[in-house]
Length: 334
Ligand code: AQP
Image (cartoon, rainbow, N blue to C red):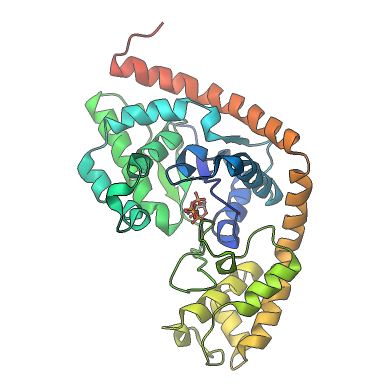
């Protein structure tokens, strides 16, 4: 009854990382052949933590450039920045009134991001999952590609859809399904193998940016934390060696091979030799993407036009849904 449709968002909260590429963008590019796709730079989400206003526009365009450089075709898909379509925020308010405080209290990402200074976190960070539900449901998206970290938020989206449909006795929203890609790739920080590689990590050495040049990539991999042991000869030998496991995982993902194959190839090798090979591989994959991002970023006005056109198309889909929601809730509408 609902048309197959994908929504996915990326926060313009800093430099896109290798984690964003391997965990999200390269998979998004594969989806465009089978689904109607909506890709969004979720700037409303980004400001749930402080963002420098002078950087926001550039960061938003850079995420757009990263998506296009990763193979997402803006003429076949909808690509836009969230704040350009006010329907997201309007539906989010209604969802603030549908979701229960107890549901949000269980969200682990809020706890992680708010940390010990919970009282000082923005209210936006707390209700972030309601906005995410609105992003998805304002298009009646049936599928969302999710990494491990977003599974709980998608569950909440499903709960909100279900409760809305029940409360208003309407089959208005689909119960959105997660789309999981093969072996989940979770890229960890180069400085600490137990922490996710993140755009907002204060240390640039902790991540490989999608637009890092060969020298920066080589330098970061050379200085990536390791342990004193040589490479193991089987995957079980990676247990309790998070940094080694991370570098091998990155090598496997970049070369589209399994971790078992990589471990077998480098069994007994020193990290220095492995790191040289990893650098060559990372440069060969990211080099063309970085150059393409640079070319796209040289014409910000054109990128801005792409996002503007995307927002118009997005609103054509969301406006009738919001209208239906308003009528269902009983709001007077002209
Ligand atoms: N390290 C990672 N490994 C695998 N996938 C990752 N993603 C992010 N980091 C990794 C995936 O990228 C998509 C977009 O993420 P996002 O920008 O919306 O937010 P995020 O997950 O919070 O990413 P960051 O880089 O950590 O941003 P900040 O630092 O601003 O919080 C998602 O599909 C995510 O799973």
